[in-house]
Amino acid sequence: MFLPALVALPAAPALARQIPRINDVFGGYPDQLEVTSTRNTTGAATSDLLRVTENSGVCETTPGVYQASGYGNISSTESLWFWFFEARSNPDTAPLTLWLNGGPGSSSMVGLFDEHGPCRLNNDSTALDYNPYSWNNVSNMIYLDQPVGVGFSYGDETVGTSQEAAADVWTFIQIFLNDTRFSQYQENEFAIWTESYGGHYGPTFAAYFLEQNDAIANGSISGIPINLKYLGVGDGLTDPLSQYPGYLEYAASNPYHPTASDSEIENATTAWNETGGCKDQITACYDGGSEDTCSAAQYYCNDNILSALSGDYDVYYILATDPDAYPPDPTDFLNNSTLMAQIGAEATWQETNDNVYTNFADTGDWMRNSRPDLEYVIDAGVRTIVFDGDADYILNFKGVEAMVAALQTNFSAEFDQLEFTNWTVAGEQAGLYKNAGTFSYVRIYGAGHEVAAYEWGNLARGQVALEMFSQIMSNSSVSST
Image (cartoon, rainbow, N blue to C red; front, side, top):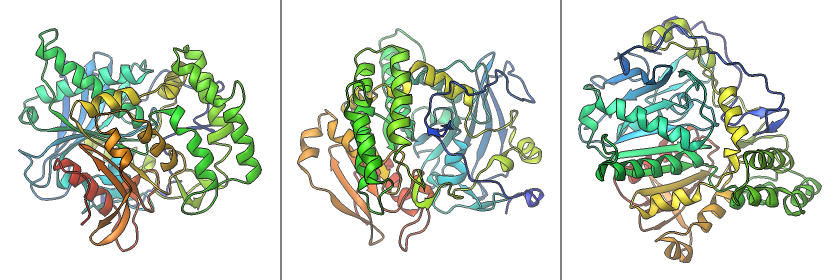
């Protein structure tokens, strides 16, 4: 326990998770959603581009391992919150990894405290426990709350597309690496890892970074080239047209139990196939559809397919009924005034910002296709892994594997000819994988939506996820241990 003053905090309810449930529809359209235009903040943007609290003593307690938290001011009215952790081993030469949670509009503090950060929030949401399977075992880590308004970030909440978000994150990384406290990492290998709506964020951001590097190289812009070497996308929404039939398949047949009745699956199948149904609406969105067309597709498909087939089970972990009390909700913990002062947080923390979610829903970004960006990044030589927990419904492996099968890359022909191989970690079966060139896919047994939050068999919580992360970040394909 690292913060004795927080012991008396009451137990918090289950985490709302990364995809808002509006009018009983996961990923619904917020026609009636009440949003606000301001955030409760205690600070304001200053002339300092990076405002940092160093070595707060919160979360990372390994002796000698540096941490910093604070804000990057990407404009005079926009501040993005970050939390940086130095690698526990060889930080000077270790890669630098940017972690992003999804939503759209959800905080990356979920990844930090529930998944793979140096500490974990314990199950009654009152204290932090040391995490021996933290991803900063092998990489320097940045957990970033984006777009503006998400988590501890605050300011003008105008971002409504993955492309707009990419530009802001590029600006933040430029500010971060220009700061003398972090400039030593300018030439280190760089990675983007993300999940959920990160199926859009990861490919879009990585493609944007590569394009910006090209622009720096040809002199059309100035900046620090980012040495992007790795991309990881977990349980992600990338290509809705390929992925939405996965709900029909997963609801009927998955490794655990059906999530819906035969009649519910039949009705959802009709909603997919009928003229003007989900398939037609996503196709219209892909074919240059307007914002309204794509927004309508999001609402129709999530109402009639995604939510309609979820049953009584937690959509993020179907071995639990809805709602699952795990992972714990960090809301009360993170909004404790003592903690906020220690880490330099200036805004009330919220797991998902409704304003940001609404901005994205209004543009129809959800139903846009990010697969071309993913293909571009893979073919550019960025080592890429797509992974999925087999107990996750909301972005299930049936849909994700259909997206992977639809990829058209330099490695796709080889990948398609391969059979899945059993993946063992410490001698225990942990999943299935395929590798082709610098692309890998892994289906992980027993994991829900937040893959690193779960344990399997005799393996410890987070052990499988760290093994996967470590292999990719050492520029290796997935292999058994």
